[in-house]
Length: 341
Ligand code: NAD
Ligand code: UD1
Image (cartoon, rainbow, N blue to C red; front, top):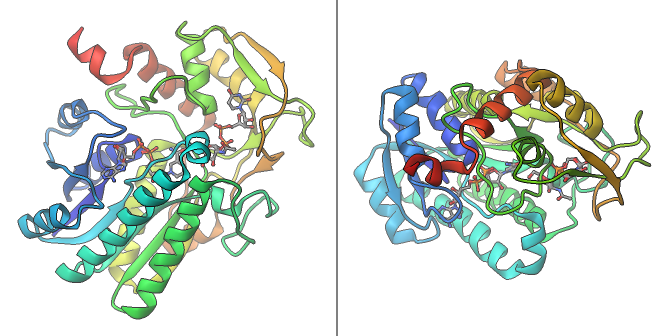
């Protein structure tokens, strides 16, 4: 039986595809390439020696999705596909609700139509909004402060309601903390469009000389060094977490929300210093004002993932910094341009 990865050529999808193929599973990838490149497929093949089936489709196109289910015996879907830029979601909320919610609905419709029972959904720690206190447990209060976050929160609710009506479904809502880093080969990694919003790709692009300096968004937070604390998790650990979630789904029914993080908070300055130390590079920075919507600290309680999945993140902040830099320095301009160079 095959595992369908919607958004499978994206950052986390590609790393999960590699992990699945390396574990001997059949992976089928579907993506509209709105935020990724077909070159990813070559890279996945280079790493694993296997080329997964690929469909360039909009996941919210039910007819196109049906064709994928007709061509493969799919019992599990890992649903990554969605728009993910927080700032853009504030400017184009309707695009975000339409794309992210319709994709989730059509995935569920296709699963019910073709008898696929297992769903692993890419949710986010953003569903905890600024409300809960870290370490965040899965039953902490939820609520969001931007349309992107609400699409995750609402998708979780849609999945819960579908599972209530169809008790044969088995669903895991994975709440990622801050995925960073890249495959250690440097063949796949994060390739953001334009100027990155997130910290690690920004640091990498300063280090490689594409950007001039990092602005640290505030040093007056209630944290040991005053800068924001987050739970950065290596994308390869995250990929392994998906394998564990799939195998949990295969043995259970119902819905579980599960955090994927390390449980360890790291400040902006700690991450920056680790990056400089591990990679022997300088990352010029200046302290700027706080960014709207940021909280002092956000890190996971990881107990539930450990007890349900027998999974824990193993890679260190140093591994994350080394692999992020390896990817960035080997692919200074991302996938497409490097491959033509
Ligand atoms: P990504 O943008 O690299 O991957 C998402 C993929 O989905 C892209 O390849 C894009 O082309 C595709 N896509 C979007 N809409 C589609 C549609 N309608 N039909 C087909 N394909 C579509 O993002 P990522 O970082 O790999 O994130 C994967 C998932 O995890 C997303 O749902 C994201 O919201 C969620 N998430 C990511 C982070 C993070 O920091 N990267 C954190 C929490 C949650
Ligand atoms: C952000 C999103 C969150 C999303 C997550 C993963 C916001 C408010 N939150 O989380 O919804 O799920 O990305 O995509 O956008 N920082 C700097 N300078 C920079 C960039 C970041 O100092 O140039 C700091 C931030 O203030 C924060 C930390 O670095 O303290 C991490 O930021 P970032 O990587 O953007 O992740 P989050 O804000 O945790």
